[in-house]
Every structure is written in C-alpha cells, then in structure tokens.
Image (cartoon, rainbow, N blue to C red; front, side):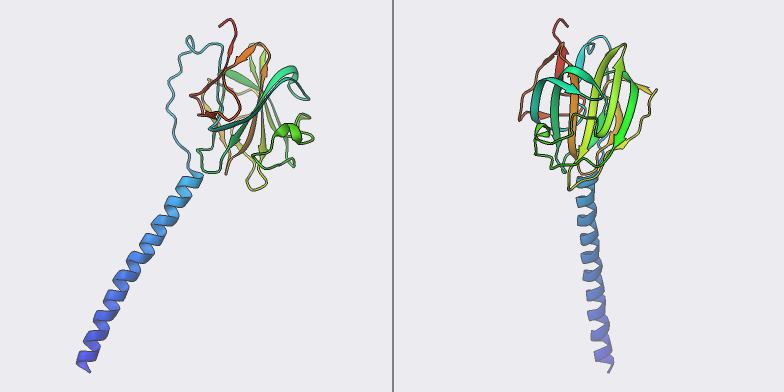
Length: 212
C-alpha cells in the first residue's frame, strides 16, 4: 500500500507539473495572439514644424487601394483628391493626424460598411457623408478623413472632438481590427504615392503642396 501511495504521489506530482506548464504555455500563446491583433504601438515622433510644412503624412498603417481625382464629397467639398487606405487586421491600428490642424467637425453616421479590399468608389454612399468623418482645418485649409468598418471588423474609436487642436502625426484614435480610411485633399497637393503602395502612419509622405 505504501509503495502504491508513493507511486500515486509521484505520478500526481509529475502530472501537476506538466499540466501547469501546459496551461502556462497555452496562456502565453493566447496573450501573444491578442497582443499581435490588438496592439497599439507607441510612435515617438519628433515633428519639425518648419521642415514638415505643406506635407501630408499617412494617417495610418496600411496599403493604398485606390486614388481618384476631381472628387466631390458631401462633407468636404469639391475638386478633391480621394485616397483610399486599407488597414489589415494584423497591422498596428492607430489613427494619426496627417497635418497640424484643428478638428472642425466630427460626424458619426454608422451603418455603411464593406470589405476592406473593396474599392470605395464601387460602394454607394461613400461620398455622401456616411461613416465616421473628421473635418480638419489648418488656417482655412481643409482636409477630410472618413472611416468605414470592414464587415468583419469594428468601428474606430475617435478620441478628439470639434475644437480640439493637435500637431501632425499625433495619435487621435484606434481602429480595432482595421478597416478603410479615406483621405480627402485639396487638388493643390501633389500626390506622391500610388495604388498598392504600403504606407506607415506618420512616416510615409502622402502628398506635398506643389510649390513647397
């Protein structure tokens, strides 16, 4: 009986040790997966207002899906350049100001959603003010940002309100699981990127004023 008890105790101890480490390994893998999917990287940008004047930076990490000229938008006006950026679910999902500006208007009209690889020009209503829209103003110069969630994603979390001011490349929100970002620029900007280009938030220069 004593020998059986000793064997049972040893087997139980070995099972407990291996069971503990297996559980720990599963938890670590689960944590790593959540970290990769939902991570928010800290971008420590050093902005020089002189050297970056007249420059538009990418507001997010992702890929350029489509660029269209002479676009009219219900919230931002006419004769604009529309740049569609797709944020994959595995990318860092922060949203950043593309230029130093004041938040002029925030419009939340949720309901319009489409798959992130779809060209927005093929979706009815994307130029009518639907989605989550931010109107940005820099001394009378207007720039627009509109966000559409993917059918397999969530709506963005915007952390600014009308009247707030911020420098270019400042984090203003988060887009869980990614989605579609539409950037609207006045036609005086020269576009430096093209479809299928990869862009990095606050690093990739999207456009510059032609005489800058």
